[in-house]
Amino acid sequence: MKKDSHPARTAWLVVAGLLAMMLLFAGCGSDDDSTTGGGEELEKVGKSEGEVNLVAWAGYVEPAWSKPFEQKTGCKVNVKIGGTSDEMVQLMRSGQYDGVSASGNASARLVDGGDVSPVNVNLVPNYETIFSDLKDQPYNTFDGQPYGIPHGRGANLLMWNSDDVKPAPTSWGVILDPKEAAQYKGKISAYDDPIYIADAAVYLKAHEPDLGIENPYQLTQEQFDAAVSLLEEQQPLVGEYWSEATKQISSFASGDSQVGTTWQYQYFLLQEEGDPVAASPASQGFLPSEGATGWSDTWMISSQAKHPNCMYMWMDWIVSPKVNAEVAEYFGEAPAQSLACDHTAQKDFCEKYHAENPGFWKRVYYWETPLADCGEESGDDCVDYNKWVQAWTTIKG
Image (cartoon, rainbow, N blue to C red; front, side, top):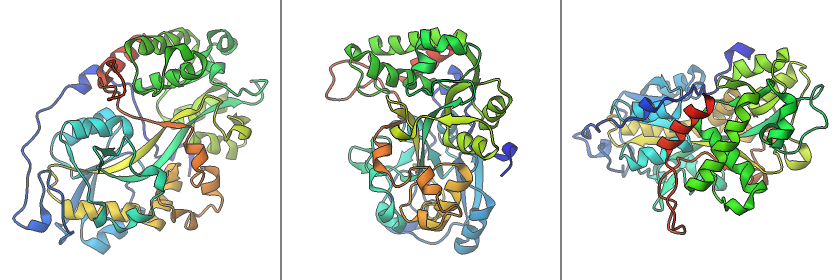
């Protein structure tokens, strides 16, 4: 795959206006009991309705696997590419789509807004062999009820130019500790999204334990202010805030960037191109000492789905072993399907992406939607996502 053809998500800067709540459309059902929509969970998968309308990250719905699905099921696949999680939430609230490939920083909002329905996992045979540590997670299961089918996952790595950054860093401090990061002023590459505030929280969790941070997405006002302050100190040192993988690849290849947060895709592609890059040490499982943030994406069905049968067929198809392997390799992430590793074209793909290494993923804080409710175990209120967006605008200046 060429550098300019990477399909990974492009997360442009989110503006507060994108978060405005839209009125929910009335649920649309069907005369056939097997094609119940409007928020009711299917009891069996019925006949194809002829099409399915999806919202997805770029690279998740490609002709190589959508066309065979159409031929097998009779469900024509229509896809709208979502550039950010916020855009996906807005699109789902239009009532025009049957399902979405939601990241954890969107799924709770979709559930809370009544935009998606619980999923009957018994109607998705391939769910049985999904990696167990991707099931029953706080970003795909609510009140004990599954709300989606895990699709794939990835981690945010620390990457650096091995010719320019010495000694090899083992901590996010190289870009987040103001004194340590100062030596790379103008050469730091940072992720351009409000969810990046969680990266600062992960660092503070390890280095300022008195703040009492447990979950980097559930921050009290004091904890949130500390994370924002850290990123405000970092801002003058940042050379670029990246949102597109291809842009970051170019900046590291040219030497404009020397160190920063990245995805596994960029790291491996730069290595293949012969660029002098390294990632968080292998001795730490390729994660900095503090751990890292990351994503786990979930296919969710709209509460207003007009084609629920086709949506259930799609969810089972996209996590079938061979198809899930194809998507994972094309996109650059670990598959969710445990049997997919037997079908990857690159025989060491799952090893490189730690697909079968639960110890690696235990150190990854998957994206979640920051909510005002910190949970029953906390007596404090947390800072909700609206304020994260507002703060990110201020941080970038």
